[in-house]
Length: 152
Image (cartoon, rainbow, N blue to C red):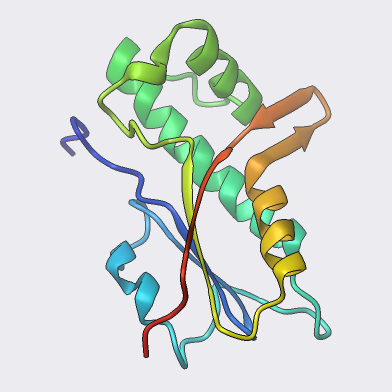
């Protein structure tokens, strides 16, 4: 698979049913960010509440997949048991921020349906910002773009 100039293109759609997450690693393109009405969410609400922990976990998986590809592109291989924290530390200490594989690895686009409360958007931003691990913290997607709303 050719990874040069690949974009992660991460997006989160906040609906009244939960979250839909789109990225390079998901078969649908992020062009579908604007058309999720009626779709079942990737991360549904639990007992009427948003699953921020589930969202954080899914975003950590995406970040880990992206970092594996970045490290592979620059060093040829990645240890099979590399943790998210180890991959992130390699990314930071080896100066891989200017890579042409997933140059948008720190970016996320957030789209919210019309009736979504501001506090929900802020909580999604918090879930996307970082991951707390027993060994240390990982910055995931600190660069946030917020889109207007879902076009119907």
